[in-house]
Length: 640
Image 1 (cartoon, rainbow, N blue to C red):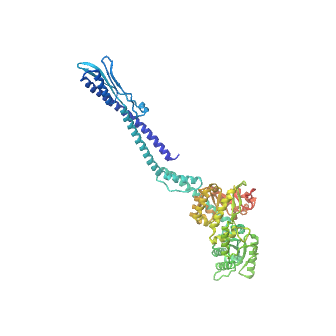
Image 2 (cartoon, rainbow, N blue to C red):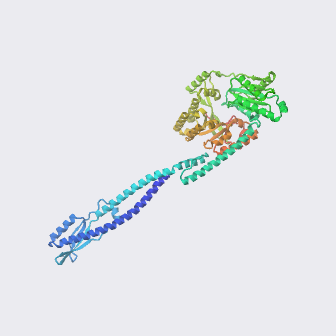
Image 3 (cartoon, rainbow, N blue to C red):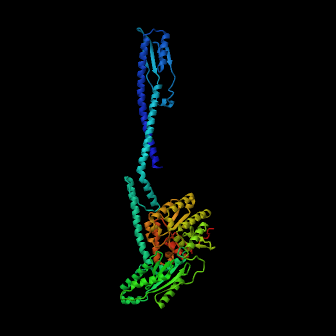
């Protein structure tokens, strides 16, 4: 029951009690007053009438006419004239009650008045005894009307008090809504803080809850800092700050296999052939400084965030540049920049660079082999060399034909040739959590449904990402009408930042609330930090309908997840580059165990991407992962 209802009930009860007490006091006070007035009126009327009768002739007919006239013109209940011996000579009686007054009221407040008695003289002789009783109907009417007015005033007062009390209560309890929202958020493990209200009792509660949120936030920050250190120890080279060999190669393998990665690119291997000589002649500290310069030069040459830079061993560095067009030009720029970083006025050191062009689906060992071949050529020829490898034979539009891709994608959208494939995400017991649904598109020149990595880079370049996301969303609604399992679609950064598209999602799901409960939404990790305000609006809008929202490919900024303590995300999908060979990597195991702890503290499920085999799955389950997906995860009954 709401506080407003309780207030109205309290006011009603108080006013009822007050009215009852007032009614009793006023009714019995009025009763005593009216009885006194009736008694005096009876006495006065009896004396006045007896005096008039004493002065006239004592003719029985005249006496009766006088009493009848007096009875008819007055308000009497009884007029009786009795002889001295008690014999009734004349009597007039009225049995008319108070018609406008309820019987229960008459019975509740009985008016008992003494009759007026006076002697009628006949000269010096007593003629008779006159008894007069006034009618009390008018007294009852006056009493009834007075109490009705009293009731009316009490009802009006109660209504006015209720309205004023409701307004005051709303003003007082307005901060309570924020307190309730904060309590619900904390219950959902969203540790938000709110301004302290002016009401002392609420202020104490809010202060305590804000302190709790602050403590959890501090704990998450400390845990995030510890995880960041574990991540750097496990994945980065201690000297240069670049990716270490193990993690870099895992990233390369994911880039070759993941359908969300670029369809092509180049792998560069940079070698300092004179590193041992430099170390002996210059000393360890100077050599370490030169290696740091090389790392900085590589980062300057490849500022794009999609590029990966790693240190393979003491003398070898590597760069993975997805979706690069001018491989030769980039190779020359890397070579020139690194030479400049290590050579001084009186120094001359060589740098070798080999590059291998790769396509999506290539085997990592083949790409590395081509890069090594290019490096060998560069060692023989000097400078840098590039190995293009075998060209792909399957049909693809020419990469430079932007207009062609625009026509192909827009035609597919118009013909509704956009759908998705489904891959299961299972929990530790092998039960379905949801189906992952990466986008597919059928182009007019091909009978095959091509994966997202083929068309999404062009869609992003052409500004068609939101239209593809909307097409996948509409297909997901149709899919859920005929399938029972929950489905998880991908939403791009452009769609998250588009308030109109978010509103369309909201309206569509509001019309189908049962589907909203089955819809999971993957958002790229960087969106949560780079577009924080739009990301929070998107989450608040769709989560209110029951959608589950999480981050996918979490890895680069995983240690900043504590900053999302107030968003209420449902899950994190950890990037497959970290998951790969987890059963053999003690460093990543320690790191991921901490990730699971902090995610579960925030109420988020952790899901591992790219699980290859049961050995990895068993290790992930022991680390605390609640869900898994990848080539090694199979469901017995896939959807139709």
